Length: 232
Image (cartoon, rainbow, N blue to C red):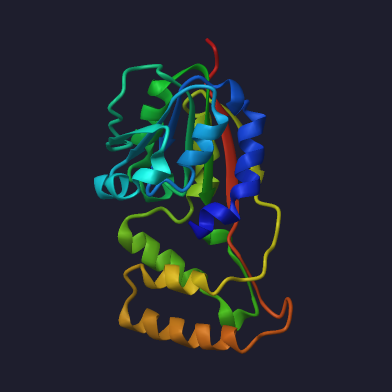
């Protein structure tokens, strides 16, 4: 939920640019607990379908899905006919899908001509952290790779989409915010080794003693990708 709030301004701008108000059928791909589904329902012209591979998330967050239909499914084998959506939204989802190529093929299949994918995905390899004593980049890279995720999905995604015939537009999240201590909690949720867990404790202690404004910077780049499926 915190990440969804942090990305809200960029997400809203991207959705306006692709004309969400005129989109007739929308897929929230990797909807999770519905952090963005309600926003899509309010803004889209037509029905919204929320899909996630974790059925428990869809069941536990009924209120978040008000106005949307819910479907359990795998992004690599989408349970939809060809060319049924004119907007697919995904945020922090493709990061976790391997092989992502299958998901992109499926996205291309279920988008109608003139349909568009809106994707917000991180690139942990490009993290900006200062001073060096608070750097967690290597911990993120190791732990994410251990889970089977692709920590460099942001930089890879535009080329993968272009290779499938999409017309791709790419932006980057442009604002630096004060570092949130929640980033350490997110990292602890990953399978750290004992040595990595100890290193994280040391880093967190160092970060907590730096209280003055801009005494530390921790920025995770996000690739803001829109991919249009041509009319023909």
